[in-house]
Length: 348
Ligand code: CP3
Image 1 (cartoon, helix red, strand yellow):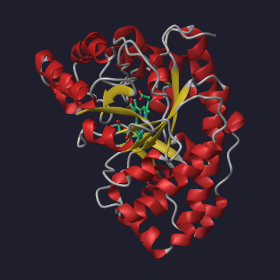
Image 2 (cartoon, helix red, strand yellow; image 1 turned 90 degrees about the vertical axis):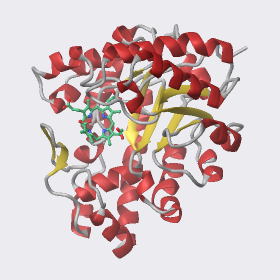
Image 3 (cartoon, protein in one colour; image 1 turned 45 degrees about the vertical axis):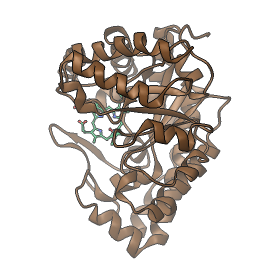
């Protein structure tokens, strides 16, 4: 099926576009009343595992906000769940693994998931979303990066000091590498299956990349991203890598195999572009909390992002991290409409 809007695909490949495409990390979520209405009737994991519900909330931001891509409604933690870990999403507390990984025994017990069986519900959600979208916009598949997934598996949940995962990598690096290897293989098969099911591009979320020293980031995180991207079976579908909080190793980042690198708002796009823009496209990077301000302020800040990247192709507009649940959807619409209009002058 031909896409009516392929701006994101072209931008990710640094090909010419008429304007800068925009989508928003975590765009299918609680800031939308329409999402909350579905969520009031079903728990989060049931929504992920019911393709009709997942497709419905995936498409909501296309209709309501007008973004240029749909990201499939799911979570990065479905991979450890498919490897055999019990996942609970507690109201108000976020996701929790009730028995986090502690020993070699725990690692050995993990299974090598078959995405066609164990994660079939995600693949079905992608096919159904594609059918319902009928080519209006591309569908983005996604997974967590091996390092971020390892962190959740070992901490059991989010953390402030990341003591458990740090104890593992410094106390038993061999076991950490063993687990990273397993996660990388499972994730490569999973992302390949998402592409086979119809995902037009995929994003790898490395939410906890920034908690490591530059050297440890290279050893425990980036190395496995290289391996992961190399193993993904694709026919030109772009890969976006989001190493949140990473301000170093640009030379290594641009060569990791990703078509685009997503950066947070603590970096200047001008400088990032100068360092890596000849090799990869750049995604980002409005501070998500700017969306709390009024539309005029939001537009001024969005303009700064466009100007910071500058004229030319290879920019995908996004926030520097996920949208927060208490943002007014009207402000998001104002942002999207502004970027669609104002970015035209950056492309001729
Ligand atoms: O972008 C999208 O709209 C697609 C859906 C999506 C979700 N999670 C839905 C979700 C995506 C891409 C994710 C990725 C994800 N999940 C990440 C990486 C991105 C990031 O923000 O850094 C991480 C770290 C997770 C793990 C996770 N899942 C957390 C920390 C939480 C709780 C915090 C929160 O935002 O509530 C979740 C639950 C979750 N995942 C919700 C949604 C819509 C909220 C569930 C609800 O409705 O109660």
